[in-house]
Length: 117
Image (cartoon, rainbow, N blue to C red; front, side):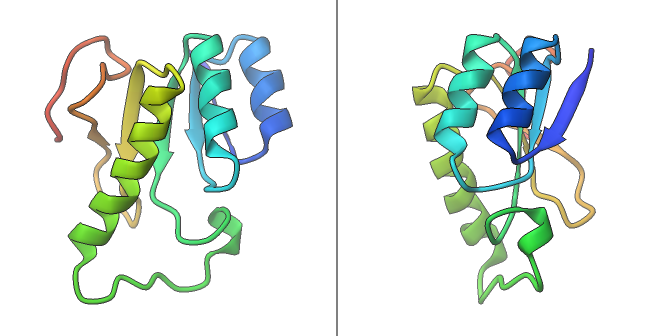
C-alpha cells in the first residue's frame, strides 16, 4: 500500500493515478475535489485536523474552551463531504501527537466498521 501526504490537488491526482491507495490530506482548501479523486480511485483518505489552509499555514492551535467539540464539528463536516463525494474508507487523525482514530460512519482502510480507537 502506498500513500501520499499532500494538500495539493495536482499532486493528489498524479499520485492516485500512479497507484497510491491512501491520501493523507493535510489541508482544508478544496477538500471536496480531493474526496472526489479519492472516490474515483477507490482509495482511502486520512482526514487530518488542521487549523488554517494547510499544515504549513498553522501558527498556533486555538481550541477555545472546548477542544473536543471543535474537533468534532470539523471532522463531522469533512466526513460528510467525503461520504457525499463517494469515499468509502475514511480515517480521522486528530493530530497533535494523538493516536489516529477511525471513523464509525464509513469503512476504515482495513475494510471493517471500526469504533474510534
